[in-house]
Image 1 (cartoon, one colour):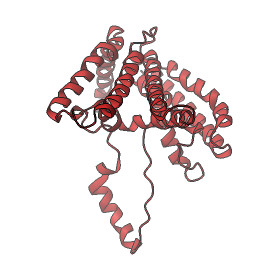
Image 2: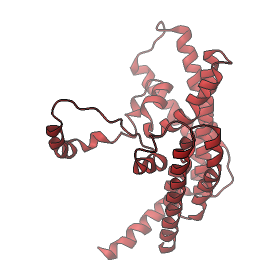
Image 3: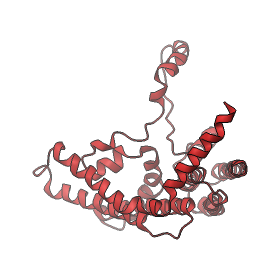
Image 4: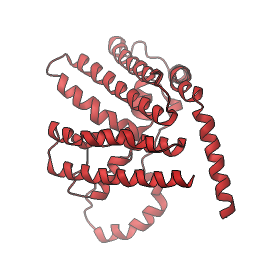
Length: 286
């Protein structure tokens, strides 16, 4: 466990060094191909760093934070201005968070500043974005993936895949085809990122089931959009019907394609065993 802790620290020191490089590149080069090519070595390094760890939870956390989002958004125009804050750049690059835009307060700024400690104490839970928004109440695939499930991470493929690809395709294709292709591409990238995460955790050959799960979900979103456009409001079902259908389909497809790869390779049992060992190791110190 001590050796794993040292490896974990070394990995994140390397990550911090890489983020410093990303900050320099983002400050020096405009968004586009040149910045993307300059960051390609960081992509490869971020993909390999989790392999230096051997336990489930540190590996999963590291892989999730640095390979799902990583420096990809640094190559595009989805970061805060690098010249404003190096600290914000680190947070936005390494962690799936959203930076709130500063608000311009007029009138009595001193009183507002005096209220900040009270606001922080009373409303700290409102400052951080909720990771999910009651996904069990979803009424459609769009509602689930776009507005309720894993909101902090959803922004990554939306800004780095969906929007750029849609903007590129719209001059060449019909708007509906461009949107459908961008949606499928975003879900495909999400599936591949999860496949990499699963490989880091299990160290087993990919079965591509989790990629299939996300491709299936993307296809369902596209079909749903087309169906809504075709029938409009004439055949709109009630929430009491749509919610069980949506949540039931999500649960069924997750049990079919999302979880088996982890269960078959014993990742769940290993994670529980590691948590127990960690707790047992802490007991003599308290």
